[in-house]
Length: 108
Image (cartoon, rainbow, N blue to C red; front, top):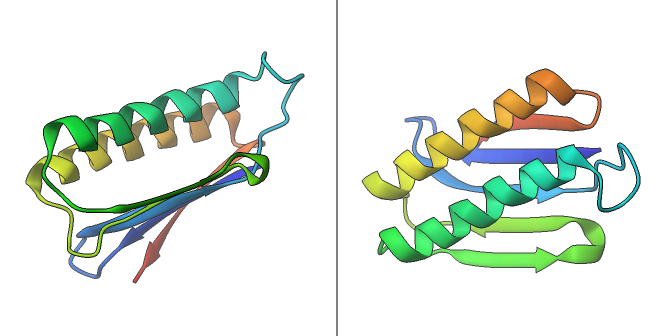
C-alpha cells in the first residue's frame, strides 16, 4: 500500500509531504496506482523547480517507495496552488483505488 502524508500547519499552509510504499496492485510495470502517483509526484517536483522560487528538501529512496518534500518555510502562493492540484489528484486516485492508496493530512 502507498501511504501519502500531507503536512499542513493549522492555518492550512503546506509544509510538505511524504510518500511511502508500493501499491503492488498488479505486476511491476503495469501498476496503474503506482504509475499515477509517480506521474503526479514527478510533475509536482518538476513544477516546483520550474515555476517557483521556494526552497525545499527532497528525499528519495526507490526501494522503500519513499519520496519526501519538506519546505523549511511555508510554501509560497505558486507552490501552494501546485500542492493543492497534487492533493486533488491524489484524492481522486484514492477514491477509485483506496485498497492500494491512503492519503492522510497531518497537522504539524
